[in-house]
Amino acid sequence: MQKKKPDQVVYDENDERYNAALKPYATNVGAPVITTPDTIAWKNTNIHKVNKQVKAKYDELKAEYDALIEQFEYNNLVYGAKFNFEPVVGELYHLYKNREEKPFLSIIAPTECNFKHLGSFRLNADKMWESFE
Image (cartoon, rainbow, N blue to C red; front, side, top):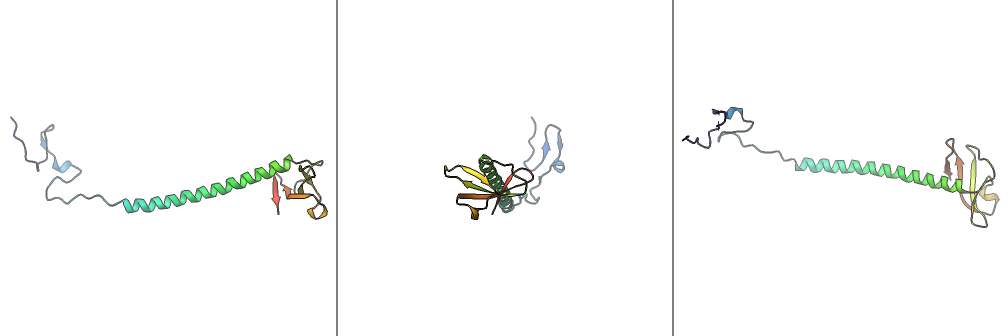
């Protein structure tokens, strides 16, 4: 029958040797107390910073998306309108509604006609219509 070692003695029964010096933690009653650092404040601060950064990126992407949708809607509206000419890149055109409430594109300025003016647009080099105020 083996004699049991006291609790404060670090003895490995498999290797049959004392290995207190090999442990990554304190094994002596007189050793300093092991305390874990308080990381809650650090986590909260960094979570707040990351949330702000993610929200800023989200807002930036949302604004870009909204601008792209707006540009899509302008192009859809203008390309869906009736016109009997080939638009020239860089020129200013005006979109109106006729008496049947159908859109048409014209080179005539809003001050020179009586149709309902929907907006003015310029055709860019990418063949995309840009709103012109």
